[in-house]
Image (cartoon, rainbow, N blue to C red; front, side, top):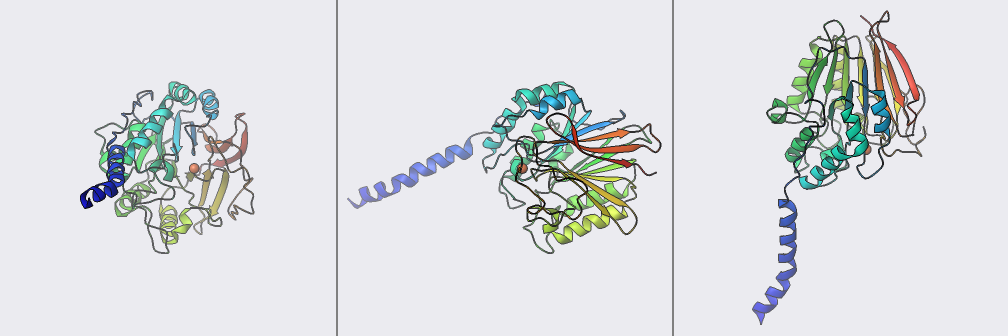
Length: 349
Ligand SMILES: [Fe+2]
């Protein structure tokens, strides 16, 4: 009788354990990212047109990719939240990446021949506002790299995080893109807490202090400069943010533009450093959904230049190498491809 009672009480646990085991053992879907023209790689081709965007839900319409296919940028930079995976089961993430690769508007954008690179933020990493404590980060990393068609033998797959560098363009007209990883080694927020981890800092310092391009683009999923709002941002790790700003100040690049996403809104921020150097940050977020109620009261930013934009949007950088001096136009565009935010920045020599 007692044996039967124990068996009866244990049955729900046994069934639950079986279900859980089945879930975690479900293999991730193999991703076919071959629709991208070639695996992302550095190129001597002159780079004049870059587009970027973030915060993209697979189960929502993605009308901006139809417009992006018409824009024909040479380079597309994912700046985080490619999917809303939000799961500790890698199979859930891979299914959403596979669905994104098959999404018709995105697929036709890829077919336009655009080169695709990118980094992640929290939702594609796998869990809202998560960092190094996220238990399936290693599997998550390989899936993201599959999605951007990173070769299987790439050293990037062996790192502690998906940070990487690309250089585009011929000597004298070169753009260097540094993609940071704000998740893989990120501590919980705190005064002395870190975001990048020792390995990535070492890499970033080396890249920043080596001047081998005319324009440096630093890509971060979360915002670097804006410090006044209550949402996640580098300023929640003040020591790490200061370390980054000090490094940007020391870097021998006269022209540095930060690109970020995450916020479901778009804005331009500007920080004048004591050295006389100016840092620009263009935030574009909301490819499929946006924070339409956002106002300056709920998202203050004392460094903002121009409007706070809450429509669906993508970002563009148009580089005019022929003007004297060369200049880059920082833009945010809406569904009509209209630049709803535009700032021309001359490139200092
Ligand atoms: Fe998002």
